[in-house]
Image 1 (cartoon, each protein chain N blue to C red):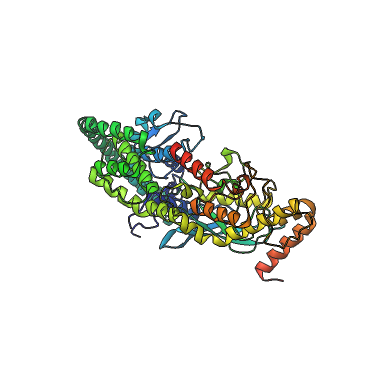
Image 2 (cartoon, helix red, strand yellow):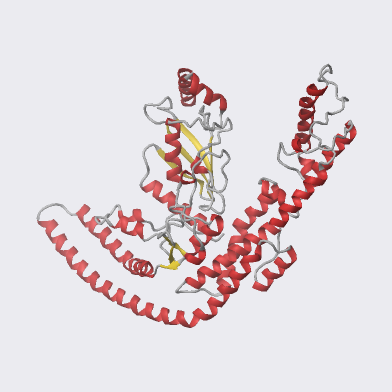
Length: 356
Length: 167
């Protein structure tokens, strides 16, 4: 891992005489990524986050991370004064921090009385020098900013076009068959391999990256964005792959390429024990005199809508078929007649697919 | 590997936790190779049967942290209504707003990207002091806590003593 554990952070101020700057810096950082605001955007509930952070949050659950009010990406607006504050503070930060550290060092090493006084005057002189530099620094960033702003204007038209197109794509993204989705991704110039769940998430991530880049005053090139997406693919993308193949979430069952046979095979024991338990429960109600241990007693048809009485083999077959077609959470099987089991489940599966 | 939003954010949290740690809590990555696996030590809150105990736990962070919460598991024995026998901690701050396994939690109590490791550990510490028996993870412990409080406290104290190796 190339990044060190040492990241600049508000606590850097705590050991200096200007520890009051810690909350100032805290306020200039995004609550989601804990970094300085990068392209701050304000939500309709008046909370500010980095453009990319809030876009990721909203595509994840549609709520503001701070107050959990529902919000939409369309309603985000740039909070440009915050960007200016961050830029100015970041320029001043190393200078003031060094001043603070020097002041602390001289205070620690210096004794009291006369010597201290000398130190103090030294310090004041230093401070004046630094202030001059700082002023220049601010001037410099101001002119730089003017430059980037005008550059940005020339960029903006082409970028906004990508944004409009990207947002458009998103509208129907969830409902496209795999091939169309794959084509869309390759048209956008991004990787189009992997299962459907991954394709959709990758598309969402790309749109977030592009849209955040459109907001930015210092837009990055497509190559840089593709690199970001590659990093995403290698971390979060891989996690999505693992969770969808591991069958951990119930939603993976709804996947088009869900491997029902493998699922049935790997969960065979659980299904068998569920079947055994269901039979054990069912018997006493109809066969009052019958022992509970006899496995060849026909199952009752109280659950069956059509009144037909399935024999042991067809019951068992229906169960197995049902499982092979589509495993459903416990309890769902109870409401279906053993005979009709496979078809209705498949129908509901198709319905759900169609609804997305 | 390039650093991601998740790992940068975890670095920030680690730094803050080491420079300004809350009372009775320490936490950090198990090794520098994997910032997504942390271990934490929580002190049993004073005035509760957990007092005097030190409870080690591991935190596993998803790659899309902080969009989704970490999972937390005590690695020592903890007899508590909201801790599964496996050690897994069941507390609302560790549940994403989308999934509510128990259908009773308020959205405002659940995970959000502005929550943090520090807030999780503080919540778990107060959970030790005040169990929530509405949706117990350990039903036996919950029943005992509700109906036989003295026995519950005795079991907890014995567990604490065992973990410290003094009994």
